[in-house]
Length: 244
Image (cartoon, rainbow, N blue to C red):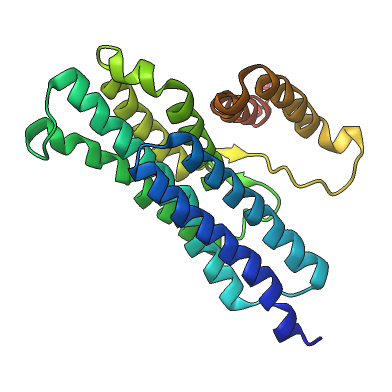
């Protein structure tokens, strides 16, 4: 099989990621957060598998790189934005008594800022040669998993709690900033199984398994919070000793 034909295989897997994101958007608009989140998770699995397949087959292609970014912005940018939009619309209705797209009813549209910053993050990643073994800024799949879990696990509390909608708006601003930040964040790619080289990854996975076992789907929000905190702790700038 030629390399050109081989490239169709990882591209097909990437297309499954895109399809998952489209389906997630439909269920998100319907307010079925759990199914929407499950399709985002499915998209994340396909996103992992397309790179794995491309490396295994040595089937890299320019179209594959572009298709991957387009699929990621739908699955990890637009789909979670639609979930947050639907959630915010419910919050505005509950807390402000506004159910039309006027006045406070326009507030839910700020959710799509996440889509814009996800696109900026993906474009930045494509041209940034510093991000071959780690990341600068929050990866889009991590951002999507955070919002999906938050929406699934806490939509009732956020809708009914006073000022819950402002908590969401604050988190939108925070996560958008993290997407395009210069904060170093570790990758989960293992180049070996040695403890010394992967102790941060092993620590992250161990705690993450515990969080998911206890919290289930909504535990993904805690896992992403743990990922951000651990990245900050392990990438603190070293202070050079003062010269005597």
